[in-house]
Amino acid sequence: MVSKINIRHTNKIIEIKEDKTTLFLYKTFIGRIILKIITLRLISKIIGLFLSTRLSKFIISIIIKKNNIDMSEYVETKYKSFNDFFTRNIKQEKRNIELNKNILISPCDANLSVYRINKDNKFYIKGSSYSINELLKDNISKDYLNGYICIFRLCVDNYHHYCYIDNGYKSANNYIQGILHTVRPIALKKYNIYHQNSREWSILHTENFGDVIQIEIGALLVGKIVNHHSNYQFKKGEEKGYFEYGGSTICLLFKKNTIRIEDDILNNTKNDIETTVKYGERIGKKIS
Image 1 (cartoon, rainbow, N blue to C red):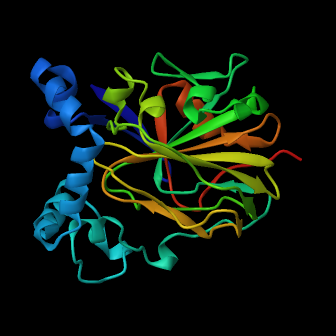
Image 2 (image 1 turned 45 degrees about the vertical axis):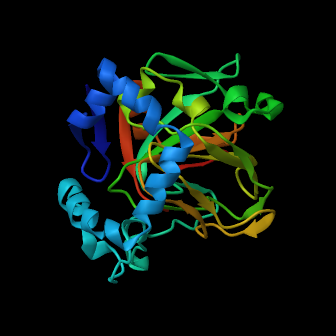
């Protein structure tokens, strides 16, 4: 299976093939048996504990090499464990926050797709139907009909911290327990992973974009979503939280007639192409 990604700053489209391990887990009978075991929360927790020990440090160099991670972007330090490396801090000058109040920014480094929320309160990804009510386990989603859902898919090589998109006040965090599938494209064809995976959501009462719902979704072997605040007054670009090991996803839900997404991102999504974005980068603007 091949997915397409538009590298935004060069406008180059690359094709990413699924790795052999992921194909084995999702495409073979034996692999799917193993998958049922490793997506259990207990197994994920055990692996997460190991990745927080000094014994996991050997994995760091393997991941850096395999994913061509540019370590010059990150604060230099000695890592105590693989998770310590995974949650590493980036140099402040490497991520510029667009502070214009009318500009919508990306909360994280990710591959972005944007979809309309239709009259049935659903959106569609690669042929799979997703209900916003099931995603949130709440009926609040009716307020977002004909709005947008922005899906930020983080990969292993991304910076895994995320920020607030505007000034405002956030509500309490709502946690939904689930299992932990990969968020790679191959899983989207077989499972409604955004409904099944462990996730946490809250309402951001923003100054410029209305009430925005933000959802953090865990993924395969990601045992922890770390949000710093509950019922909190925040500022644009301030760190909201981070993910521990693995690929992960952030979803933002906007009401109708609040934002205008950049054309390149919408056009790429229509053509089943994700767009690379960076933490703090412009992805749209406020509708006046």
